[in-house]
Image 1 (tube, rainbow, N blue to C red):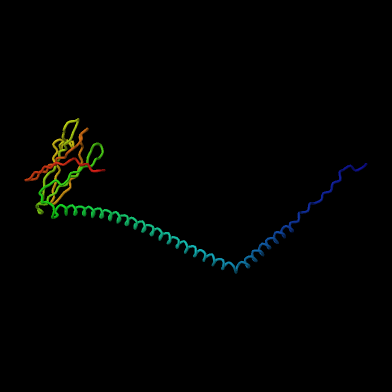
Image 2: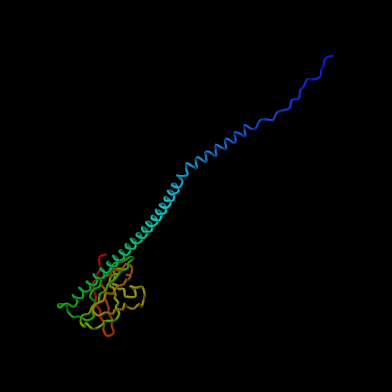
Length: 237
């Protein structure tokens, strides 16, 4: 009878060989160590030089930054100094202009006084030298009344001045007194006090539809009263 049992043979499995991998790993590590050692030996002489150059570059950079800050501070200081000089120069120019105006006014006063007390001028006591009006807005007028006296050079003339404007309104003769002109009924006159001459200035309001023709100026002092009339004189504006 033939043998029908299966023919199997149990063969023990051999363990894989690991030593080639270990050998390759060791060789790779040795190559890395050799490469690091060679790089270190090659770079060792250069590292101190590079370190010194880096330190010098940092020092130069710090010096340049300090110099830049110094220049910036100097520029700011110079800019402020220049602005201060410009402001001072502007103030000086304004002051000089004001002094020029004052000198011109004083020269005009001196010239006026020389004409007033000149050898050919008649000696007068309290006197209204001139009366002038300048048109302003809304029927208002700026006035300028000049008072003089050259009779007594040591005396002080004091008192109050007022004037009345005479003219035509609605085809009829009319007048406006000091209170009407100032829109203050009962208003007193304007004070004056001078030795040789004085200019009185102010503003009045003419009545509507009033055409001025003459100005009657009245001066009242402690022991003197003066009344003078002038044709209406409007200065060109």
